[in-house]
Length: 244
Image (tube, rainbow, N blue to C red; front, side):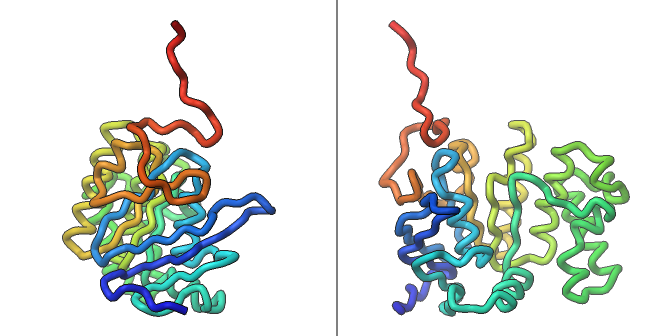
């Protein structure tokens, strides 16, 4: 194994992975610097979600290495990877995946409650982030009583509440309208810079990618030198062209 560069908090080398025989990653390597907001960009189906799941330890790549803080992740047993995700990582997906029986503040506070924080401390922290994301008034309501956009903001708050070392954000603004997207992204990126959180932000939207420090482009499961100006088409779908 080759040790990662000293200034990379997260490093993946030669990652290959297939889903039921269909290739998703074809030898992707990427390094993420401490405190960086890195965009993983490309069309839908390019392998962005698979890359984030491999880097976060949710998946073990078929081939390749993943390192976090100069320690290997790909060789850890399942329980150790789960503990790493719980203690060091936050995740926001394109759908909220909230616990329906819990209120909004309980969902947001869940990482702190599971780590043994006091009820009061967890609730206060959750309320702070819900307020910053303009859903503080929803704190006592359950997910079924919220709009989809409100549920997604609660999910973002849940990722921010424990102030993890790394947040993996996989199309986190997909359910949001344009104005809401900008507000949520400003909150996420400002919090990351204030608290030194590293963010990997996967998106097919160039306007979302503009919030990142730099971008890594994926096409067909491989690194691409660059992408054309967006919006980027879905994988395997040719862009529309005007007829003569």
